[in-house]
Length: 273
Length: 186
Image 1 (tube, rainbow over the protein chains, first blue to last red):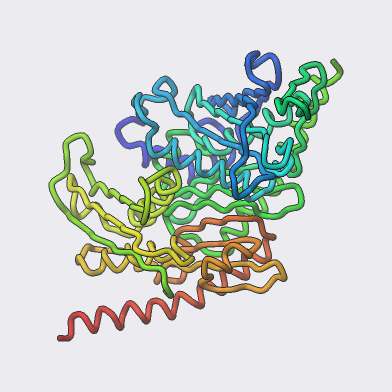
Image 2 (tube, rainbow over the protein chains, first blue to last red):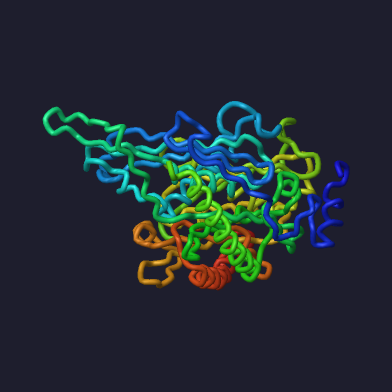
């Protein structure tokens, strides 16, 4: 297995299954942990485990003045970190290319899916707006980082409670009312599904780190609940025909329904507080 | 296309640093420099897209333990930047004479709010569009090498854009042939 990993995998793929016993189209068990059980200092947090891949997302909300050209918009700043403890190939130091590309991807997904509309984050036009710093940290990298990150982000955002802020007219200062908290308005629920391409033909879903290394390409598709595509991310790799891409999209839509059910179940189990 | 211009410089196959060399294939590196400012996170993700697209076409196994560096400088940006970079990269690879398994070209489609598909949008059209899809189409069988979307669209719309992009790819490949012919015929 260590000497000829590709041959080892090919033998399994010929039988239409994978070394860890999964079917080609089967996902690893997903577990989600939302709320105070994850990070107590953050305004919203979630821990997602996709098999062995563990990603934790913490959201901090701060106040800032909005930009001059978009006075009624707040900010969302996603930041993906791949610390060296999660896999041996990541060194400590400035964020590597993979972390930066992942951060950009998450920012694009938020923007494309209109998950959080920036106007909702505004408190007073031109004076005060919320800034949401979303820190997504990978604790254990076993493939499929993008799916887990998007999932963690979504779960954490559902958990965020923003205190009510009013601006005192006379002093011009803001007053934060910590007692009254409102949840964030989340408009859409994007879910990412990743596939790995092998030898230009086979498509497998939810690749582990080993599979990703051996794959000749990857595709990530983000769908929202109406079946619309928020993002198709296919960074190079073997060419795919339109039909194969369509196949991926249909599978992504099915996956979306499963994930949505899971999130709803978990949220329901923590809200009666 | 239009007013967007990107300058591509390719160096390689050259001696690779020991930390970066791969034992069985060439190590590809892409650097994208914006017109103003330092390269940021957006450039990094674009570099990754370009790098993996190029890695898929360049026959790296013919040049193991070497490094191929591709430097792209944005001269002006008037829309469709990513596909311009893709086209510049492919032409640079062609010009350098590196062995490629297939040619590729970049096409950008913008989906306007009323549903019409616009190829090669300008910056203005990009801003007004509901969604922008960029595809890298391979010359063999018109398969999709790279796909990147900004904004949301339905599945049928994506398929329509893909079909339009594949048709446009034929025109671009013809342009490649003409330019190379011009360059080498004098």
